[in-house]
Image 1 (cartoon, rainbow, N blue to C red):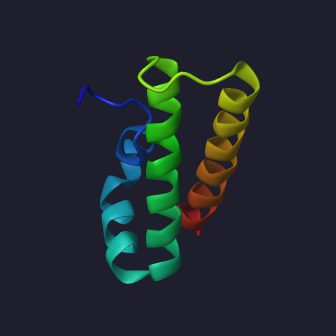
Image 2 (cartoon, rainbow, N blue to C red):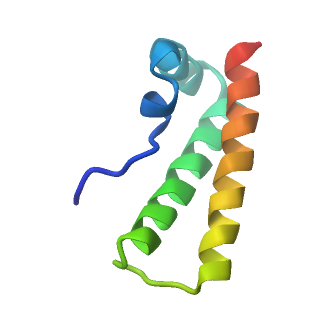
Length: 78
């Protein structure tokens, strides 16, 4: 599979070590990171027409991804 943009380590490169640490130590963070990863893959597949979808559905996925990213950043910043 091709490179998928917007992975957490790329979005927050200065926090990569903390992301890895929290994924191992905090089950809630790990669950959020997994959800983000799944949403990010869905968005990427839609954007590259691997799994085309209508514009509204794709926009909704992007909004979900952004909200989840914000929640993850709050945990990383705490």
